[in-house]
Length: 64
Image 1: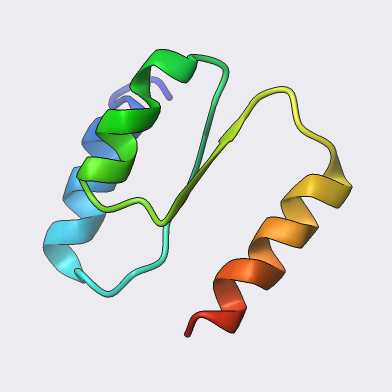
Image 2 (image 1 turned 180 degrees about the vertical axis):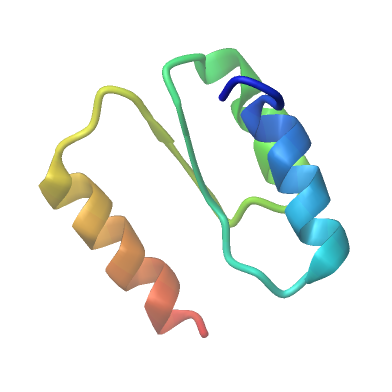
């Protein structure tokens, strides 16, 4: 993202609505813990398949 990184964007989203469900994706696995601590409900490491993403969306949707 040109202006913010994913961590910054997630923090901002959580300020607007702390109940939002964020599936964080990144090729940088070292930020997984931070992403989950700031409110992401899950973390998928890139590269991932559409099947993996679909399964994770379904899993998160079942938690709502």
